[in-house]
Length: 303
Image 1 (cartoon, rainbow, N blue to C red):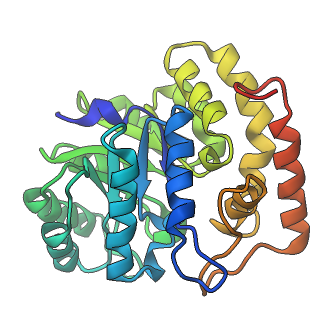
Image 2 (cartoon, helix red, strand yellow):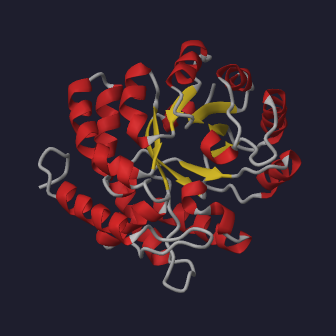
């Protein structure tokens, strides 16, 4: 396996900031990228689901990618989300995408048409045979409607161009089965913020996170501590941040984290339909949590 070690640690699944009229807020995106890198986030994921990728037009995709690459300037690895329900359309999108400055592709398993396990394997076989960058597969049955079983992911892990899985099934036994039998160099990355600490203790290699937007240094420190075996330090950060990790998803994502980012004066609390901002009571809880955690002396980098 090549290239995989650079995705060990805490990665951020970047939101896409919008102005009040719904247009791209590239100034806020620049500010966000700088904030993440300067607070020890190990890599960034562009245009995943958290970036509201289904509602981003092709010209906007290019602007977002170029902006992140320019601000990053080679400082941390970058991952670009390219996925879909049509295998050959995804393959063609990978082949024709501007991948300058991109180190890997995050590709979610096909959604809505719900392929069986054999179909998932063959889908990724086609992508792995053609993709111009290494692939991180992504299992998120809560969004796709179909779970990639452990044996399916292990079969896909044997493909030369597949370097990792982002596992967001929440199924502990499934994750342990993948960890137990994965090939050398194949990373298993948590896709669930709240489960990241226990999954790191089981042997996962990091997280692709939403919570890192609000508390990048604390999340990065938790992951780094756990990966080095300092579970006491990691556990303390985990339990301090756990209420926030739950609350940001309580009324839809990325609406929750955008409330916190607005409180942090990084971007506006604007999402595109069919998403809606979180309900006022949820927003108030999120703002209160952000203020409390920003002053919590137990968190790295806090006062």
